[in-house]
Image (cartoon, rainbow, N blue to C red; front, top):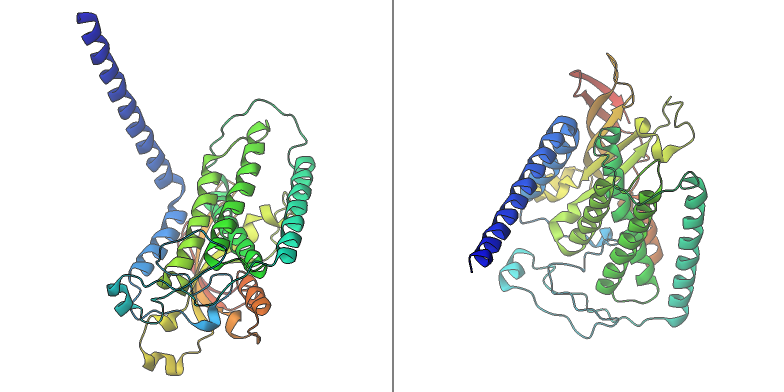
Length: 364
């Protein structure tokens, strides 16, 4: 009996020690975040604070419906290929969002030919990309699966890139599934599953490469990017914010010609449709295609010497090309939504070098 009691006490002590170790690791993790990821935390904080202040009047614009459909709101998600009828939501939400309190009444019918073409092309591209990456990235020495944390890599630009890539793949595949006749909500979940599966496959392969390793940070960024894309489909106020990417080739000789890794030339933006934040009087004089954008970028992130690596915050304007390019067909909405992922029209912006405290006016 005493031996049995001793085992129970020992089990409880071990469990308590595990909790203590877990808490200690979490504290170390957040400490590292504060040390190395001030820019990323600032970027996320600005977004969260702004999103929490979005007025109730923010509603979806039918011209914005594309990959992120305005027909997807806070609703129960039945897994079906055909929608029979619309379902009412909470009556309180009906009052807050009277134009979005029901699902689309459009009926969907899966086209076997389109779906077959889509699955064949998707499978072929996935296999082709995997083989390309196998020779381009994983052709070096292979070893046992291992984990390698790289939170500080490229001063968080790499993680923001994974975040954006996860959401972009989800939205692209969702639009492709809708083209095949799949019901929108089901297409959203299929798109998310494909994105998670594809990105996870890359991370697992990295885990067997001696030069890299499985990155928990990359995987978390991939997943949260998918979650962000789904939240935009299901929550109307989130549709007033668009994550965008711009690129101007830098003088980085190490990554010359390799734009995905040329982080010195990249800027990630949060583009806000400010017409949805103020009253009708504001809409009368402010162009609905002109957004306010907040960007984050880095310079010389691999140079640790004096006057080297720096984090930059941008505040400027951005164009919503969905409201500039004509066309309202399913394909054109898909194309405009995809193009609107990139900030390719230069606009004036204020650049704040957060590392050295310099402020200057730029065109980006």
